[in-house]
Length: 602
Image (cartoon, rainbow, N blue to C red; front, side, top):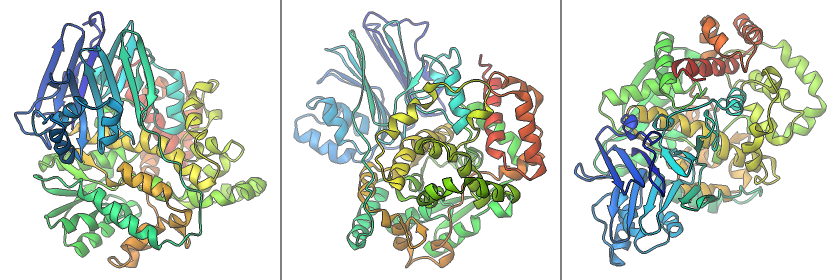
């Protein structure tokens, strides 16, 4: 797990615009190593040593095949691949997964090597004899890679900070205000892009070529199947996905929320016969806190358990630190408790954690999915439903029935994919100052065209490619790596994702519950309060906190090109009365304004 950066120009690098790997030290505090050859290629790595030895270095150069390899991430099946490389006469130069990739490249095409890798990774691969650079992002987009190509030079880095910024991209900012994140291939700066999940760029003297080396699986639309065979398949695949992520020489540390996903991960992890430690965030407000469920799980599994309190008094300092660190604005409220959790883990010397991220988008965990069959009827009854919901108090739960119902009604007039995005988003197009350009929709429409026709199947597909890859995973990577901590997520294992995509709909939504097959998997080990629980967001209780929060005038003014001050101030006032739940609008506006101010962006 590392931070990587580099520059390549077939005629010689312009050092004035070269990538800055030293700015990624937070991602890899163990060592810094650089390789430069012929003034044409520069590659650097800030290394966080998890599976490699302290003396190992990367980027790694393997002269047998003429490759330089720089890797951010972990290849979980690297030991098996090491044996394959040795059998083919190319033993890896050292025991690391980076050296294993370099050895495989000595006798296999790039595509064949990538297809063998099981893990999370962003790769920079340079081939000397052909003077060709390959930039690659893993299948699920767990590890990020920014890039910029101008005047024949390719620059890249794990975070935006490695590439000097430029002019703000208004289209990206509009997307952020609408949906709380900036998706690949966009970045907040014009001319700087992000690789999409499963994407590869090839760069040489002829220019660049982009393609997808892996395509996400279609989600099965079939339902009403006998689930017995699927239960056995899930048990085996999930167990394997967790076991290969258990570190060999480090403590087994679990992010334990008490929800279904982290509970399932913990159930398998304790079977490793290694001592496991569960870390849980305890929210300061009772209606947002689920630490009691995590305590129940820890007691059942006999885990060591540590609870980290996150209070409203922590909010200002944590928000300032987190929003200032992020490469780009990100309005997921779970950034705040996640920052506090990672800070505590770092103070305890923890370097690797196993989490339950990614299950909702494969097993239909969000409450929005349950309403999809009723969309057509709701459209016909839109006016009376809206009148009823308007009279009801929204409460303090961002995923509560009233709050979600109002968002659902607001987007009913749109195409299904826009409706899906609005449902999970913040501001609406009518709120923003200026027309919404077609470029804002280009990323979503790209994936929507490939999503099939079944309402639930296509919603899962779109959320995997958008909300999961560009929102949830972005939060996990940026915050954990701010403290040099590696997060391993079994539910993001591509073999498990592909398997779950083939599962029938009734394994995901059935008997009135989401995640049916996961609930059944846990049913014999945990009490009803765990098995029957509804989805609760991990985010901070911003609804009540923002009613007591004073939005600074300078932040309001900084947003004027995109949000009219009177519209924003009206939204803040409406939220403070308690009749309207505008937390997502207000928080996204604050996140953007604070990022712009701290980065002095223009």
